[in-house]
Amino acid sequence: MTQKTHTIAVPRIVSKNNAGHFMAVVLAVAALVFYLIGVVIGEVFYFRLACEALIFSGLAMSVDILLGYTGLLSLGQALFFGLGAYTSTLLLRDWQTGFWLALIGSLLITAPISLLCGLIAIRARGVYFVLITFGLAQVAAKSVYNVRELGASDGLTGVSVVTADFLLFKVNLGHAPSLFLLMMVLTLSTYFILDYLMHLPFGRLLHAVRSNESRVPFLGFNPQVYKIIAYILAAEIAALFGAFYPMLRGFVSPELLFFDTSTNAVIACIIGGVGTLIGPIFGSLVFTTVKSIVGSYTEYHVLVIGTLFMLAVVFFPKGIAGYFKSRYDLLHRKRENS
Amino acid sequence: MRDPFYPILSVAGLTKNFGGLVAVQDVNFKAQRSKITSIIGPNGAGKSTLFNLVSGTLPLDAGMVTFNGSNVTGWPVHTLNRAGLARSFQITTLFPDLDVFENLRLGAQTQDLSAKGFLPLRHKKQATIKAEKLMERFDLQDKAHILAGTLSHGEQRKLEIAVALASEPKLLLLDEPTQGMSHGDTLEAEELIKDVSSGISVMLIEHDIDMVMGISDWIVVMHQGRKLFEGKPEIVRDNPDVRKAYLGEN
Image 1: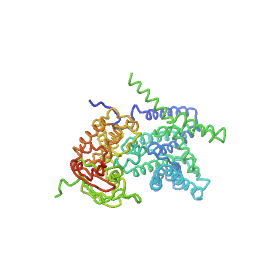
Image 2: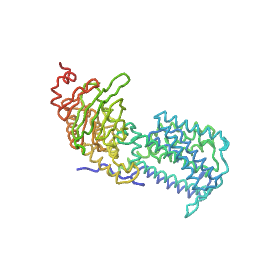
Image 3: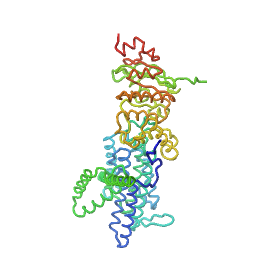
Image 4: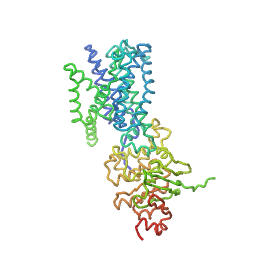
């Protein structure tokens, strides 16, 4: 009598029939091919560019948790990205803590700061939330810009090459292909973990907050609690990826905290597909590549990127991942019907 | 020992002003367990405000609300919901871009208190099973994967009640459940409400007077923010004051 109308009762870490997971696998395979070719021909530049794209993809995923799942547009995620980058720089350079403590330190310091910022920001809704996140990040950026101990406008330089000790093996992060592989593993693991979280009751409540926040209390949940958890989670992801920035570049600059960094992440997120988590990774790869290629021809690359962004929004309103998903689902339905 | 038949809800001296306008003034009544209590009254009588006060949607100016034996005055909405008081809305407020199944599962996951939404899979299964049962009960199985925002009005009204029920409340407040429904749908809703009330207490605001008279165990009549009268349906029907205020008869 009752036909089974749905199949996703229990979320899986990796599941078939999931367009996002399929895209992640495709990305992993493409990355391996890229790696092999790159190693054979002794490439360095594109490895480092890819690492940068992956670092910013973490920031874009962090935007997506808020925008795509909780319905909160943050124009200040650079605050936490920069916080992670600066903390990790100070720990690596001045405290010689090494890889793991630099990461843990960045995550630890982000927790209370994001809690504080979150408590301020989530009191407001809609455009006021956006403005508060923007304002908070501006305050942080201007402060760093004017504090000599933090390098002021020059930033902090002189982070030496980091070696990550994984007990069984060590990874020299100065070696571009190795750093690339590590970043790929980190990015994809982050994707799968976040995607899993978003399918748990916790993630579903974030959906509910996005869909109709005022109804959530009548389900027995306090939406503010879920918004603050999402805010802290997003901040931690941004800080984690930010902490890798000095490991790639050897320096940090206050630009990391600027408005551009925040908006670039939002753009990457939208190009890739809001609310998909995998989309922002693709969006970030596309964005960074275009920026780098166009940037080598003209200093007006922002114009080109702006135009591309508008075209993307007009022709692919659901982003790369959204477009792919509709194709993928269609194909799947056809196969099931035949 | 406590009387097992103490009322599920009792309100005393409930008062609410909006600026200078007195919306609800000094209202007292009790809703008995496993009964259907209806609030009726002409437009602007303060019925919806009364509901908003009881469900914690609006803060009250004066008075006391006792739910299931505890004083719940001033409790936030989500705490009240956890304690077993759920409500539906006159204007449908679902999660429009989530599907029917997801709307119900969200409603059902309230009971997963220990999990807090993060861990055990067992709890998630419970919410899934509950959502399935509700879809069956409300004849919404075919719509499981349809977005709530695209359902027909009647279906949305049904889903509205189902979502409120999903948290397995002790008391269900229904704000004009048949609002905007066709006659056929209203009859169906009437059956549903009767069916629902076999296990839990129900309080409803309703305009359809035939329906109210048919299903209520107790009726509270509101007029200009005050309680005009209360009693069993047949007594309310014959009360001259009620007829005058509500039906406009002399």
